[in-house]
Image (cartoon, rainbow, N blue to C red; front, side, top):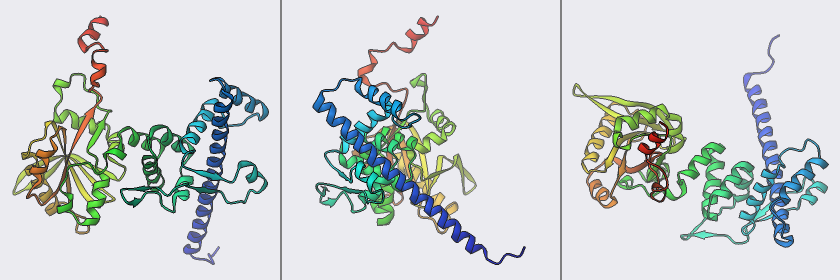
Length: 370
């Protein structure tokens, strides 16, 4: 049969269907968020007024399951999460209409307002787009943010990131664990003098001052060296990208450069889609030394001349070391033209000081297992 339409018509229909599904999914999520907020609010209010005990939520869940067989999403654990979610936002938000009104008027708009327009450092923190961001985030991610953040500023930061960059639960969990909010903009760097204003801002948001490499488990910290850390990162490359950010694409380790018939090798090379540039990571297991920047500056020059594509921005280098003194780093950056930063890392082999005496050492554990 001869087609009486062109491919653009099919694409138009496809886009209309996908857009409709997306809007339907957003509306369903919006209704669920309001419902869960309302239930959490009611539970919280009654716990305070009636002095309910710890088992009441289990009983409520049981009764709901009995009244509505097959009801999903209302286990005692989920209802407890609704309470945490609502209690976090109760002091900041007014969500309407009520659930009962929605049942009577299902097409009624759901409003979300802030009692006060918050300001931080002279800049508007909460935008007029707040409601769209708030209702586009799934409840599981909402609960994670409400239970792991300490302020409205921090919660808003993670909400925006989750909504705009489509973060999964796992990715959001990782970013909360590594403290992205507190780390952003803290990286010692020379981006301002080496990059354009636009790329400077993007770079500041793309790198952290410290990275938690908790997937690296080294039995004997004394045996830790750069190649061992590198091999562990490559072996767990997906986890490393979750740690540094989902805008990074891995290009290789021990990346080979040839300059005047001599070979040089970059520990880890990535491409950052947001900044549109190559990013070189050099690993150092000790303290930062000023001479590290000279070597990195050389690598970046070689990358820009031999590897970088014409449409890409200048390369960026990150020295990832065990320790650093920010003043020494600051002095070291002077007079370097290539964009560089110095960050630190922690691994799972590092036990917090307060727990060191509470746990047996490796030798004691070996003796216990004999």
